[in-house]
Amino acid sequence: MRLPSKALIAILFATAALPAAAQDTAAVPQGATAAALECGDDFATWKQNLANEARTAGVGEKGLSALANATLDQKVLDRDRAQGVFSQTFTQFSERMISDYRLKHGAANLQKYGTYFAKGEQDYGVPGPVVAAFWALETDFGAVQGNFNSLNALVTLAHDCRRPDLFRPQIVPLMTLIDRNVLPADVKGAWAGEIGQTQILPSDYLARGVDGDGDGVVDLRNSPADVILTTARKIESRGWKRGEPWVQEIRVPAEMDWALTGRTNKLPLADWAKMGITNRDGSALQDNGLKAGVVLPMGRKGPAFLTYENYDVYLEWNQSATYTLTAAHLAARLAGQPAFDRGNPDAGLTGDAMKALQQKLHDKGYDVGGIDGILGTNTREAIRQEQMRLKLPVDGWPTDELLADL
Image (cartoon, rainbow, N blue to C red):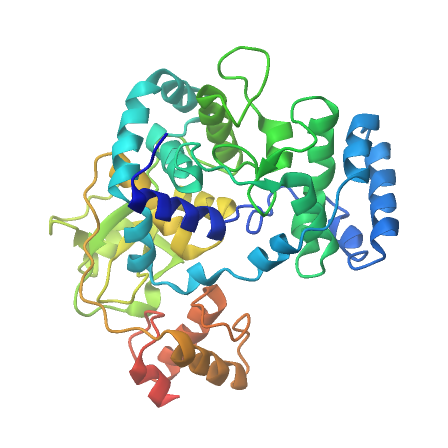
């Protein structure tokens, strides 16, 4: 398939920057912390210990042979330490990732594979647009699945001492898939070890793979039916609630108690309505019996969304707030909603200014998760605490005013 240049740029951007395995911890078994303590040991000894573990778990000679041939890959470590994408604002990131190409092909695939999407919703309760959005963002519907040797990638990241507890639990499942001839020993995928058209972790591939086309094989690299149903099953396993919404764009008033905003502070829609929050078009919110949080990714003057419990499931896929909101909004677009209103947010801090703010917050005793210029969850919460102390609007958005006041 020949892709338009803009779409190709977006694909390379997404593949390089959005590792699910680097975020997804739902499948980490007990004992992973103890195993992670071996990181950095002599590589041959480390591999032998891993082989013993795999043999005990029932992995046969084919899987063990694949491990014996596995090597460390410096390019994987380089990629792991170069995730500058997360320094982008929500509008920058989402407007790049929600391209015309993805919207067009997402709609076409929802129609082309409608039978499988319908079965995914029937069996697992996950709407087709939700699955299609992940399919689009992860590999542009299978066009770019990654060219890293998957076993080498996982071995490298598990032996490395940065985040071994996230990666080592995926190695034995991958060896098992190889041993059972589900995957070849040299299977390739994303740099963080995910495989297939929606970048599934080996543990999910093994435990939740669905043979959607009935050919007797779960092929997440080549079979759209298997991809769609396996992805729906994975999402359902993370707590998706059938028939409930995930995200809803809203309009917030000029003034309200901003300290009540945030994904985790979920209130009935009737409560938000009393504070002056409306639907995007200005019509009154209708209480649907559910609770939702108000998410302001670029502060009180920027885009605004209600996020429901199903939105929290997105964080089980990838813990980047920017990625999850983008994925949720893309699903809403594929379900027929318009592009979000950018609003008129105050200029945020980037680069050295953002690092300076983080340093000041760190010096005040906050854990900002590193002086990296990235507005992560810890930094945003520290900002909210200081905004509250300084009697500024508590919307978690870093501005020049806040930096000066600190």
